[in-house]
Amino acid sequence: MELPVFNSAPEASASGGCASHSCGSTDDQLGHLPEHIRAKVHNHPCYSEQAHHYFARMHVAVAPACNIQCHYCNRKYDCSNESRPGVVSEVLTPDQAVKKVMAVAANIPQMTVLGIAGPGDPLANPERTFATFRELSEKAPDIKLCVSTNGLALPESVEELSKHNIDHVTITINCVDPDVGAKIYPWIFWNNKRIMGREGAAILIEQQQKGLEMLTARGILVKVNSVMIPGVNDEHLVEVSKVVKSKGAFLHNVMPLIAEPEHGTFYGLMGQPSPSHEDLQKLQDACAGDMNMMRHCRQCRADAVGLLGEDRGQEFTMDKIEEMDIDYAAAMVKRAEVHAQIARELEEKDKARAAVAQVKAQLVSIEGGKPKAETRPVLMAVATKGGGVINEHFGHAREFLVYEASANGVRFISHRKTIPYCEGGDTCGDGESALDVTIRELAGCEVVLCSKVGYEPWGPLEAAGMQPNGEHAMEPIEEAILAVYEEMRAAGKLEPRADAAQKVA
Amino acid sequence: MALEIIESCVNCYACEPLCPNKAIYQASPHFLIDPDKCTECIGDFEDAQCASICPIEGAILDEVGTPLNPIGSLTGIPLELLAQYQAAVEATYQAALEAKTG
Image (cartoon, rainbow over all chains, first blue to last red; front, top):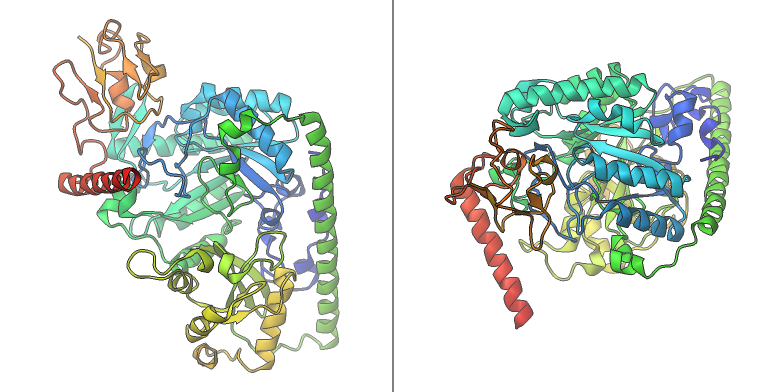
């Protein structure tokens, strides 16, 4: 990719004199990275909070075999309605995968990244995985290649990985202590044997750490994924974050455990709870002291296609692809144009942001740094289809992005999946309506920003302490949030004590 | 003397490249072992390779039909919980089948 580096504007937060990591910018998790790394990840939707609004990714499911068992995974599962890692609808041959990638790249020019993430472990299927990468680096050189692995076979694969234009590797590291590992991994397959329990976990941990060091030594970017499992590794992940950062990982992604009885996994059937949104955020904040954190991960399926949070896989099933006639040379020209257009758009946003920060800095110097009246942070939920603007109806949203507004600016916190109000029908399971699910998922948010919101959900949202707001349709997310926060301040709703504002609504 | 893959196989390919005799092949609806080629890995490995990586309990049987990985041996899920889950899956499947056939 020869795109200009548009994230290179001077850090607005730094020049604005704000000590907070999150000052006025939500893509700040890249802010502390060296320039050469930022240049590599600026258009990668999984690594850049900003990029994920604009660029799309896809996974191809060419790697069905796995060399370990995790307690949160059940390999029997195969369902097109489930959106979580390890789940796919059809396993592809490398040839089919290459065809699919080129068809998607031609039809969704925003697609910049191809990942192989399963449904098993890509490096436990080295021939299938590398055949796919080899052919793609030749036929579609404008696509970034990524791989996600449990790390067991990583050290032996580093040489091959470095040959294929792969500059990003994700390792899932849930622990650095074999006693913790024994509670997560019942077995591994190693040197022609199945090794159970702690002994297996110890080998896995050793291989993961060795692989991490070998990759960073070669200048390949490593992101670490960790699954937060309450009572098993939640406290331990702070230590994991420190260790992997010291070995050169550039990003840490702490994800919540997904465990339901109907998945048939060990954790699901044993009633292991998933973390609450609040506990996840607390842990992410605790780890952020040591490392760049990633909060916009959608825990995609191993065959996901499209922008993060959306899955257009059904448009690209093999039977449909066979009928498509793809002129990739022409597609590459179009793709380059689309990427350049997005780059210009982002560059303008960066400039505008820098200008705002400069004005703020001047104001601060005029006022002699007089501290503002203390205002409490507020969580706001946003309905968006991408592009960094508020452009989704309340009733159509399958997920909401949650931001925190505070005196320090706006920062992205997480995404919350839900059932769209307009598709929910009367009830879904346990007599809970789609609106109930949304209200439960958005617990803690005081404002819900969307392009439109109907009369019916308005009352229940207000009653739950969430102010629906459709006044900022098509506006950039952060600016709208700041405007609403300012309105709340002016209305006296941001007094440090939190409960007052909850009851006003 | 040969091992056998049965219908609970999920076609994950993990066993196929490990077989020292190339006895395992892809078939529909699931992978199969050529009994004329299978040696149960005797002379090559201490443990049968297919059964050592297979993630599905009960999917690989020995020559007398005994599973090499009995139920509960790989996941640690208690047998009664597993039985309840399997009954629920079966009930859901039957209900879907009935809805389909009317």
